[in-house]
Figure 1 (tube, rainbow over the protein chains, first blue to last red):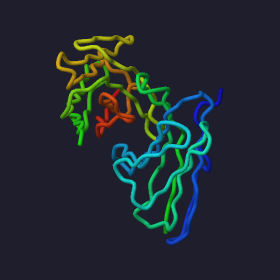
Figure 2: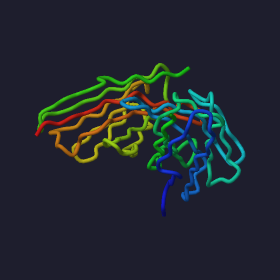
Figure 3: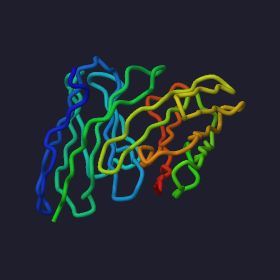
Figure 4: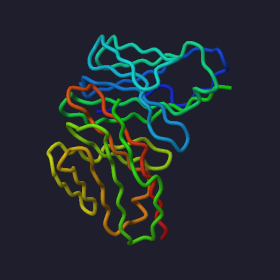
Amino acid sequence: NAGVTQTPKFRVLKTGQSMTLLCAQDMNHEYMYWYRQDPGMGLRLIHYSVGEGTTAKGEVPDGYNVSRLKKQNFLLGLESAAPSQTSVYFCASSYSALRKEQYFGPGTRLTVT
Amino acid sequence: GQQVMQIPQYQHVQEGEDFTTYCNSSTTLSNIQWYKQRPGGHPVFLIQLVKSGEVKKQKRLTFQFGEAKKNSSLHITATQTTDVGTYFCAGGEYNAGKSTFGDGTTLTVKP
């Protein structure tokens, strides 16, 4: 099992450009999450999904959109990137509402210039 | 909304000393999880506690969940350089699809 994978690993964008980050999990988990982590800071929840076809806003959703068309995939989109979105983005998944332990992907390091 | 606070923010210890980090929630939790993130890495799940007053051990690590299910602690006995990293707690509320992470405690160990 690959666990949770993220694509790409690194990306540099210019202000105003758009991109999509892909997260895939092969553990049949119901729940998936997108976090951002700024240098020396904790994890802030952007959006999450409690099942295929569902999404919900987290703590810092502005400037991001998500989609969960397939159970195993969770996409994070930046429509018009801003320097404030420079961060490391982590995707995570968990099995259910009772088994909340989250398994994280390796992260995507995004720089917006 | 729910808030989860962790203290201390940083802890510097000499190898062999003990270390403890504390996690406090503004609301009653259904469960709490602990994660470790090595420098440059991603968070890795350590353990989940679900019962009031629960205590679990993993080798030199001892995890406790408070009686009121609003606080938790992680204690490391006789730290080693391999314990270096940031330790996060995450509290899950009842009927919530997400957990709220604390800001973490960063541990450095001097050989």
